[in-house]
Length: 330
Image (cartoon, rainbow, N blue to C red; front, side):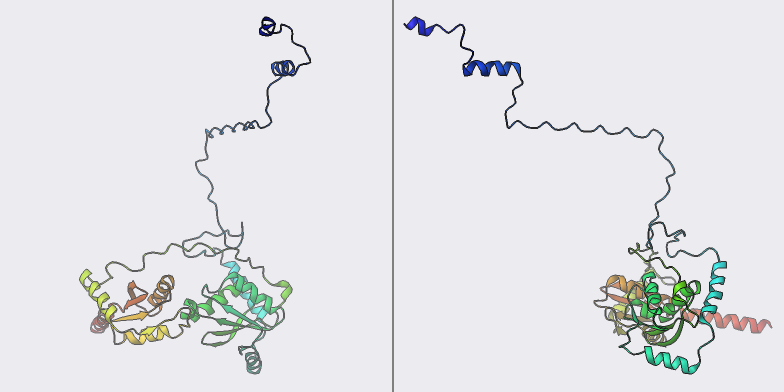
């Protein structure tokens, strides 16, 4: 009996489970239910182009929309090349303005639009006159003869003449627009007698803020006309001198230039306290005062602006000597 049990079966029944399992594995590939999925092969990198373009065309980024800027950027502006268009624009502007307004008409428009509760008002921010603002002006001109422009504050209010110039400059090419009232930071812009909203100029909107241009160095290590020791002494005098004015953030700086010119009549160095104004706005204020006062910025430190009036005494003496030489020669 033990011999029979110990001897293996030579021909097991085909209906047995072990027999079926062994034969199924041998004939088909074993694939358990939780087998990992094979990852797809990675695409082979493309070989580099043997003939690359050595002079690729530069990509132009326009703040007025893709493909809408065809002028060359000089770093500070994009000047117009053709002067004929500006002359034609000036003629069209005169035609749109029509006959000059009488004094009674101007007084009526000013009384209607100069008040703070005027519905036709556009606020001019710290970025100055932009293309979006010009489009808003034309939108107001559809239903009103004039529009009230209020400069909320910031660097543009330092030079209101520049704001008025740019409004006239834009409308020299885009017909219409005349400033009939100006008081501190309030302007009233009249559209003209022959203004037609259907023929308004198409102004491209600024879709994103452009990159700031690269300006030259504002403050030199050694000021022109001074030595290193004299420049250092001027800076120390300015830091320890009383502040001429205290400027606030986004304030109205209409009288800053006049105060600086008056102070330079008696003082050689002045200081402007620009606490909480911001480093960027401090430098922009310094650039404006350099051109308008005129003066020489010699230090920007801890939101303090130190301005030097320059070698005015030497210039005056040289002018007087030149006049004396001419008079003696004659």
